[in-house]
Length: 479
Image (tube, rainbow, N blue to C red; front, side, top):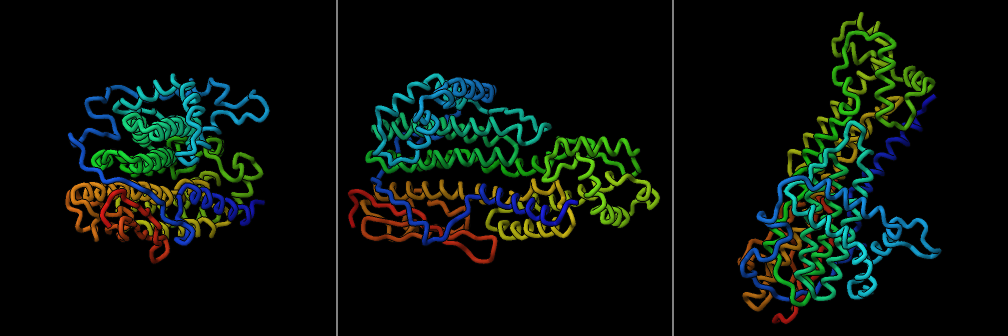
C-alpha cells in the first residue's frame, strides 16, 4: 500500500531539486564582498567599438543548433575529454577545464592551458560559427519528455566552459580584444540556449551567462580594460524567454500524452481507460510505478472517493460518474488540480520579480500542502515546484549584470572627473542602473579610493536579505 510517508518524500525531493536550481542567497555574514581593482575608463570611441554580442551585420540567417551539435560531436570524440581509457592518475581535460575556471587568474599555467585549448581548435571554430547565427532553432523533442534534452544541455555547459577558459587566458596575457571576442561567443551561446522554451533551458542559459559575467568582471579589472558599459547594455538577456519557458512546462503533460487534453467526462470502456493510464505513466515518470497493477490498485483505493466527489462537485452527470472507470476518474481529478495550480504558478510570471516572489512562494507552499493533504500526491504537480527558483535565478542573473554596468558607469565618471562620486546620484555621464531584484538603487559607500555596491533582495518570507555585493578599488584616483 502506498503510504503518506512515500508521498512526503516525493514532495520533499521535488522541493530540494528546486532549491538546487535557485542559487539561493546565503547569510550576509558568510558572503563577503567580492574584491576588485579597476582603472578609470572613458566611453570608447566609437561608442559601440566593443560588443558582447555579435553586431547585427555579423548575424547570419539560418539555424545555429546543427552547428552546436557538430561541436558536441567533435568534443565527444576526444578520449582526453571523455576521460575513458586514460592512464591512471590522469583526470582528463574536462576536469582540468573545471579546475582552471575556478583557479585564480594569475595562477593559471598558461602554457599548459594554451596547449589544451589548441587541441580543441576545431570545436572552437564550430561554436564561433554557430554563435554568429541569428537563432538556434533547437526543435526540442518535448513529446519525449524533458529528460530527452538533458544530454544537449550538459554539452552546452561544456562548450561554454571551454569558451570561458579561452577568455580568461586572453585576459591573463593582456590580449583584451581576444578576450572580448571569446566572451561575445559565450554570451551568444547563452542567448541561443535561452531560446529553448523550457525551464531547464533557461537555467542553462543563465548558468552560461553567469559564467561569462565572472570572466567579464576579471576583464574589467585588467589594467587597461576598455569601458564596457554600452557592451553590457546591449547584451540580450535570456530572462526575456522565462514566461515562454514556464508556459511550455505547463503544456509538457499534454505534449507527452495528447489524449489527456481531450479526456471525456462520459465513461470510457475499461480497456480504453487502462490504455490511457498506461500511456500517461509510461511517459510521465512518478515516484511510484503507476503502470504496476498492484500500485495502481492501491492508489485507486486511496484516491477514488475524493476523485468521485470532485467530479460530482463539477456537475458531471452522476450516472456517468458511477459508470466511469476508476483510472479515468483519477486522471480527471489530478488534471483538474494540476490546471488550478498551473494557473496559480503561471500568473505570477506576468509581474516583476519584486512584486511576484513572495506571493509566488506562498502559492508554491500551498500547492505542496494541497498535494500532501491527499493520501497520494498528484503526480503531475512537481513540474511547477521550481517556478520561484527559476524566477529568482533569472532576477539574480540580471542583478549581476546591473552591478557590472554600475561599476562601468562609475569608471566612466572617474575618467571624466578624476575622482570617485560621494553618491551615485553624482554620476550623470550615463544612467546608473537600479537593482532589478529590488527595483531600488544600489547601496553605495565610498572610502577614499574605494567604493562598495550592495543591495537587498526580497525573500519568500516577509522582509529582505542584504547581499554583500562588490568592493572596488580604483587605481590612480584622488582620495
